[in-house]
Amino acid sequence: MPMSSPIRALEAVFALALNTFRETVRDKILYSFVLFAFLISWMSMLLGSLSVGQDARILQDVGLTAISFVGGIIALFAGTNLVYKELERRTIYVIFTKPLRGWHFIAGKFLGLSACILLIVIAMGLFLSFLVLLNYSDHSLAALNAALISVMPPVMLVFLELLFIIAIATFFSTFASPLMSVLYTLSLWLIGHLGDSLRQLGQLSQNGAFAKFSEIVYFILPDLAGLTRIRSSLMYNRNVSPEVIAYITCYVFAYVLILLVLASMVTDRREFQ
Image (cartoon, rainbow, N blue to C red; front, side, top):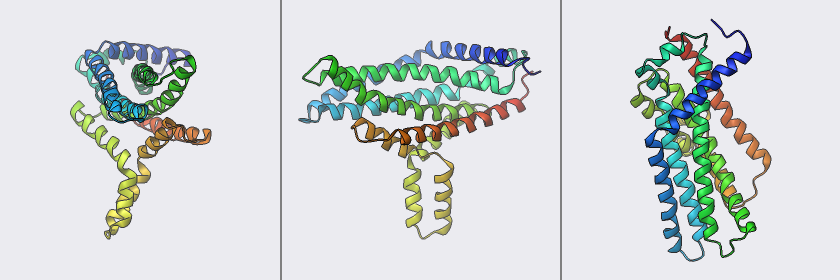
């Protein structure tokens, strides 16, 4: 039976999101990944010291790569277990005894995990900004502001990519086992970064079928490599227009919305009563 009002629907989504957020924060594996990211950031200082005049740049490169990798791993494994955990503990049957629709459940789970990932990404970004500040000879407020400006905008684009990973993982978690969900999500994540290269390879290939296939893959999957290029431009203070940022944001959100709608449709078709 549908929810009697939009307010109650929002209350249900918020309750599920809050519960998912708390469960993810309490996960001990999550803390080990955060510690790993911090250690990588400290290691980047050592690498930077080996290159005269390039300390800050190497620090930013290694630190941002660590944030992207660690955030992606957390999003991958936490997202693929979103529905499975509820099924394993059979709590999903209790949840659906209430007047809930599939989209309430999916939206709540997605928002809760996204909020947790956002918190982790911001914490790692601030930590990286602090490390960058230590590499400046001037530790004034202006230097801190410069460090934040050079780190936090690219970090938020990392979070944008992680939203896509969470959405893919959430979709596959509605009908596949955790292992298969991880494999499917990881494959699409990697292909998203290699889509443009695959397209160029297809254009150079003499095989017409492969060229057509690579073209289809490029247009179906999001261009995550393009997102990485924009992120690098922001990190090195190159000119990136607000229109480009707005476009890439809407571009990723469109994919996220489509995946969540598909996940909701699959959830509605399953019997949890």
